[in-house]
Length: 425
Image 1 (spheres, rainbow, N blue to C red):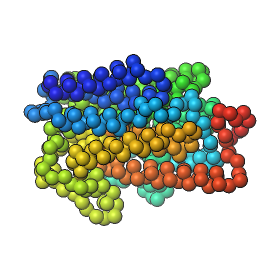
Image 2: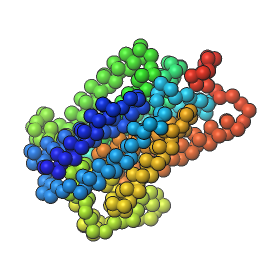
Image 3: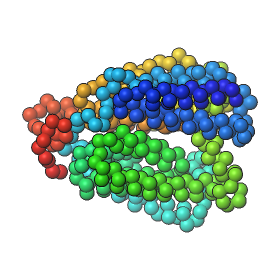
Image 4: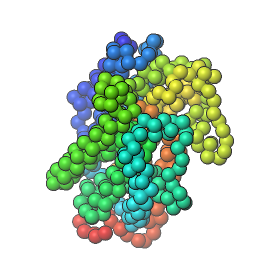
């Protein structure tokens, strides 16, 4: 318990020091990360105190590895060279982004139509636990029936972060209320239905945390009336998501059909296990897998099977969470963890030092930020596919910007602070 308390205490001190010493609003994203990881550590303390899960050997070194990784990766958000401030960023918006958003809304409608019959059947049958077990066992079938539906589901999933970003950019400059409302409804409904389809609480949590982080970042740059409406909308949506999470938790984990101690303990275990599983289940292992663990699902796409058993390398994590550090340590050990953190640090430092931010740059920053947010719990083996697609999306957006910059055409919208002309979509 002492080692876990030390881990939690260091995170708390880091938060307090940042709040006391920070003089710039641009550190907000870093503070959100620290608070998330600290809150998770509090759930970890409850797990150990109440003996909700069995971790017989919690040592100090794994926690030190986690802390070093966090502080290296998060440090660019606290750097004096960080210019990433929602009040000051200037946006150059090109017409191609509108086409991407129109596609997102169209594909969202198709996605909703695909998910809706299955979701209604699941709600009516109330077989949440059974459906989730089928998912774990790999016995679920594809919900799409043709190529258009498959493209729609994948586009909506992989372009969600970009669409959320564009939504907040529209809010910042108060452009096109009808389009941004349609976009917001598309984002919320697709993630909600996808979560029900997969009987997942994590999808809701990951989305809401990213959405809230983006909102907190852009909040100071939004008009008062927009903030007020968005606060009401987010409170309502959070309430709906909370009710859904309670229904799923009760169905899957309750012994009495109501929110009892068993279902409450499952929530505590869900949110608090990651640093403990890394400490006991991942660290130390006998043999590192040299990329097989992190990249195995990517190679599966090319029909190359790179599976292995946990026991063969001394792992004991089972299906537990192990933070974003876990897969890197499994593959490359402590040195790999440090190099991975330094790589994130160098990339973020470079991106955050820009004087003017194109949408491609902001998208890449939030792609990395989402990785760190989700990594407080777990980065699953399939997440490598999402990262690759996000990089491809970034390359596409960046290439469009280069084409437009090198051409004689003016941007569709120049949303910079020194540009006074008004445009209409």
